[in-house]
Length: 64
Image (cartoon, rainbow, N blue to C red):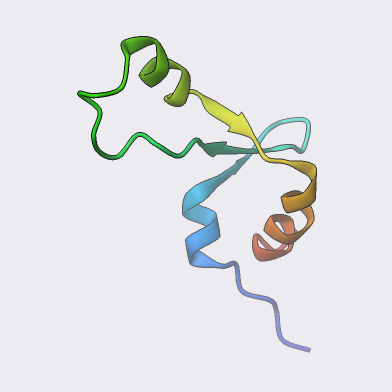
């Protein structure tokens, strides 16, 4: 049986932590930043742990 290829879109978006969780960049940091408060942009700029519901699908896309 052939090897499963890693989804090239998923490998750009997710990073696996040492404990096996998936990290992702939060949405909302692409445009209209001058209207958002500094406090909000700082919060949005942090990486976020992927939700448990999405974890199984994303892990499969990464070939894990």
